[in-house]
Image 1: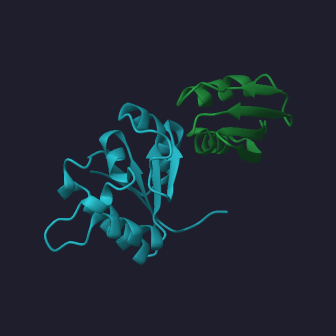
Image 2 (image 1 turned 60 degrees about the horizontal axis):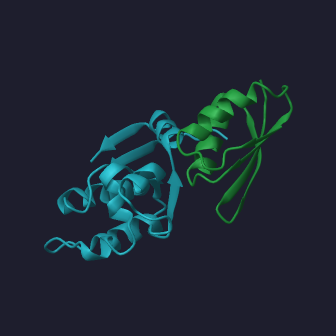
Length: 72
Length: 123
């Protein structure tokens, strides 16, 4: 599942990721696209604290693509 | 990966208009590193002006080195610097106007750092 968070800024990306992760199955991935400069650090820390796994995080220009696996 | 190292966090909310409040977080953070602790400084609200490119170089009090020198020494010692992205907006600071070795972060990061640290000090 893909979640486009471009144009949304801190703390909204974390709120949206939290909502959306419940719509993917356990073991499945949520792919997030964001351009909030805080998103990489914030989403990684949210995922870790929420018990999910960050599979990868790539930046291209101002855009971030972060892949998170729902673990619970 | 669990680490037994203690962690210190210094939150800088004062800006360049209060130069006497700006040295301590860097000095304390460097000292923490020398004491085998991890240390980070998080710049928030007016604190963000401290890491605006070029500003720290202009600050020098009495016989102290310039704030930029102290900041560079802290980074060299392994102190991590974080900038609040929304504070940059608040202070009308364009993206890319920050000192080089600063990580841009937000509310989740600051909360995480605070609960994860063994000691937190606010300036």
